[in-house]
Amino acid sequence: MSDEKMVPTRNRINVDKIQQFFDDNGVSMECPICKTDEWSIPNGKSVGGNALPWGTGTGDMFMTGLPVLVMICRKCKFVRQHSLLEDDIPGAIEEF
Image (cartoon, rainbow, N blue to C red):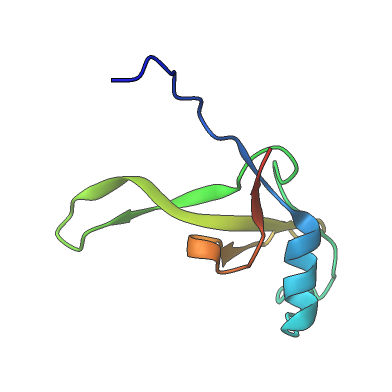
């Protein structure tokens, strides 16, 4: 057995990769509620997003959840989410 200590990986969201993915795929930045196009990404520059709890369909919950990018409309506070599961948006989650 090795005496090496496991160092936890720290991740963050690469907002430039998110924007590139949106541009390349024609993702609208318009809020469906108030039609503005100004969004904030909470903790986007320091952590790897958020997670939605998910289960097995039998009522058992996983300890982790579906990784998502959360965006909040700056005008009406509508919340939208985009999956970050298994590199759904290539390069969006990076180690630092």
